[in-house]
Length: 111
Image (tube, rainbow, N blue to C red; front, top):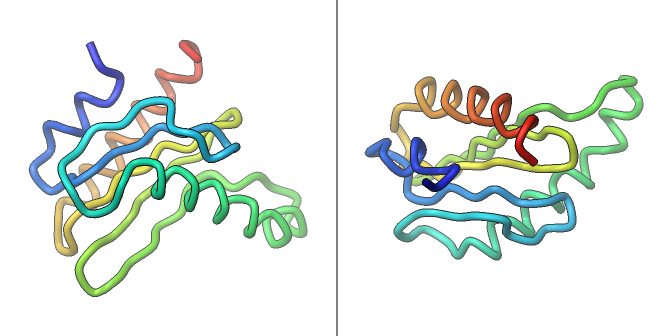
């Protein structure tokens, strides 16, 4: 069974990616939007870019959201990994966000 099958089952999720902070894809599911390798690399780059501000706060980045006119990327960062979902704008953001968080908590013990 795929780690990301829960996300793939949500109607508004176009793509979901589990990536290392090196930007490499560990697992992905989806059907469009952008490629899994681009999404993984860009999520890792965003995490690195935000290290200055999160470091100044004395905290690690836990989650971020990026929105365009058509799409949103919701991401949860944990233990050297980033788990993100590309959803259609206006999609079930709360459900996707909760699913990402729950999945990340389970993956901490498995990765």
